[in-house]
Structures are given as C-alpha cells and as structure tokens.
Image 1 (cartoon, rainbow, N blue to C red):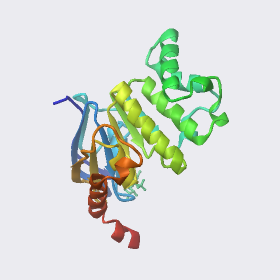
Image 2: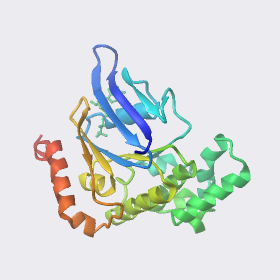
Image 3: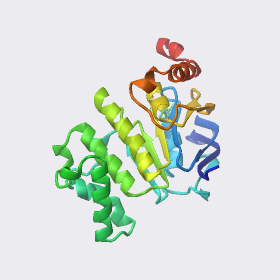
Length: 260
Ligand SMILES: Nc1ncnc2c1ncn2[C@@H]1O[C@H](COP(=O)(O)OP(=O)(O)OP(=O)(O)O)[C@@H](O)[C@H]1O
C-alpha cells in the first residue's frame, strides 16, 4: 500500500462566524501517493472552499488537512495549483520559459537547474519550440499546457487542479486530459482534480469522490477500475464506464438538479 499523500480529516468550514454559512461539514478523505483522484459535486456545494482549505489559503473552522503527514498551515511549498482561467494565472509580460521558471526561483533553484527543468517539461507538453514566445501569442489550449508545465516543473507532492479544462474546446479538452494522464505516468504525480464533468472525472480518475449538496460532505468514494491505459473512444464506450457514469449521475441527482 502506497503512502498517504493528502489526508483531509473531519474538515468543516463556516463563513462569517458561528451563525454564518456552513460551506463544508465533516468532510474526510485520503489521496495516496501516485493516485489521481477527482472530486465532483453540485454547483455551489463547496468545492472551492475545500480547495482553499487544502491549499492553505483559508484555515478551516474544524478538522485538519495534512500533506505528507505535515499539518497544512498556510500555502505549502510542495503544492502546485492549476486553475481554470489560464489567462489570469500566467504572467503576460514573461516568456513561456520565464513563466515556467518563475516558481522555481522562489524555491531556490539555480539558473542551470531551472533551465533543465523548463526544457524537460516544455518538451513534455509539446511546447519545446514555444519557450521564447509570450502567453498571449498562444492558443488557449497551449496556454493551459504552459500552466501544467509550470506546475510539473515544481515536482509538487500534490498537484491540485480546479476545473482545469473547462475553458477549452472539446477536442483540446480531450488532448489535455490525455496529456495529464501521460504526465502523471511520466512524473509519478499525485493529483486531486475538481470537475463539473462526470465523464471527465471517470475517464481520468483512479477514484472519484462525489460530494453532497451544500454543506459539502463525501457521499461516495468510488474506485474506478478501468485500468491504467485509457482511450478517449474505447474507454468511454465500455460497459464499466457507462455503469460508473450512471452511478455518479444518480448520486448527484442530475435530473433533479436540472429541474431546480
Ligand atoms: N467568502 C465567502 N463568504 C461567505 N460565503 C461564501 C464565501 N465563499 C463561498 N461562500 C459560500 O459557500 C458556499 C460554497 O461555495 P463554493 O464557492 O465553495 O462552492 P463551489 O462548489 O466551488 O461552487 P461552484 O460550483 O459554483 O464553483 C456557497 O453557498 C457560497 O455562497
């Protein structure tokens, strides 16, 4: 059994003091080293609040978050986050290479090592020839590749991804999903990814955590036994995939959600 990388135990958060809004309640789960776990939940259920607590941006009212066994207080240095909005997370005045190397500087890496890492990850995401370009010279999908490269270059203990593929077209989304699966294999990354897309969660994950409506808690920890090799057409057509999709949709009560 591999080590626990992320442990969330009894997490609860209420905004605005004792009589304020309860956003998450008694939420517990673990992510093991090398695992790719997805979180799906109804709109407004508390996913962002959960991610803020895991990344140390807020201190939850109850419970605890541990990364590699260490209590998270403030933003951990061995955490990397990829957001949905790539255009706001990249620095437009820095080249692609400088964007990727930026967090490495604050982590104390020397010039040669920064260059070596940026070469490696840019090549990996298929942007070896775009290192000198600026983000605004690239397509949306390419910009998100830069964000992923920047996160991978840090070799984080945990890669947190918040709806990372929600702002690109369907074809690019498939490509980026497969890029993530490849990167995870290549770098042995541990990934926690939040998505609204049930199919995406099953396609990518080893495990899917289904959240309840607000206040968020885990309604199901669903293992996804679809094998390590996934294929955008064959996997999504398989009987096991269809069964899992229907299970998650029922848990989320998507028909009711669509009516309300
Ligand atoms: N800073 C805040 N102060 C008060 N209430 C907040 C704050 N941030 C979020 N909330 C409330 O907490 C609940 C959960 O919000 P959160 O943004 O975590 O949900 P979400 O699942 O990420 O939403 P979405 O699916 O729309 O991205 C919502 O009812 C929201 O209004």
